[in-house]
Amino acid sequence: MKKITTFTLITGIIFIAFGIFFLVKPEIALKSMVLIAAALAVIKGIFDIFNYLFSRKKSNKPETSSLISSLFILALGILLFFNTDFGILFTGFLFALWFAIESIMTLITLKYFRVKSSPAFYIILAFTIIALALSVLMFIRPFYSAMSFTILTGAYFLIQGIVLTIISINVRSWFSFK
Image (tube, rainbow, N blue to C red):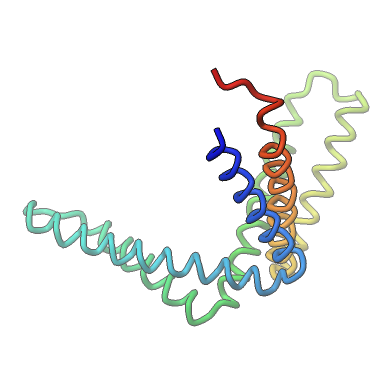
């Protein structure tokens, strides 16, 4: 049990450190996240190319689509390494697209409400229209969208780190290990 609480405490402290870093230096944190994604994309692309070559030896008809996908992922990783600004904009566009799709789907779903005159209906409608407008703004200014992602991630790390630290300190009195 001592190892569990120590590990939880260390994890909590690391999360708090990351949270503070993300909140204090969001630009550097965002670039760091893009570089980590670039490294993962390069590794996955290379790994998938080796898998394709290995499957080509075993099979007469390897999947060409897997080679194309591997090369695309590898190229994306290399692009992100040498152009982190592209990665930042890409992140911003992804958030804008996600929010736009969610808002449109909510508007479509609202037509199935039985009681369209209820206050809840109008509150949901108003917030969904606001969310859709925000997603349009995010398409116009994707950098701000990416920065908000970094700040939200920092807040999550900070909050989760505090929770883990509190749990590690109080684990013996709160939980029973039988």
